Image (cartoon, rainbow, N blue to C red; front, top):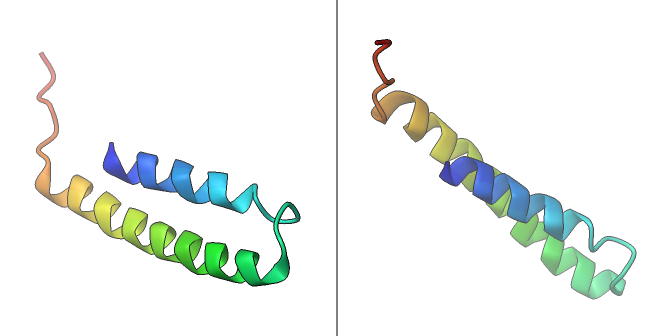
Length: 56
């Protein structure tokens, strides 16, 4: 699902903490926070707009 992809990208950016200077980390953190917010929105859409598969 798209939400999981976005969450994984945000986690990968979080792994950059301590590997980059403070200025770069501040920018990466903003991007990570936006990815997390978009992942939450995508999850809500996935849960409400994608019909569940019917059990056979």
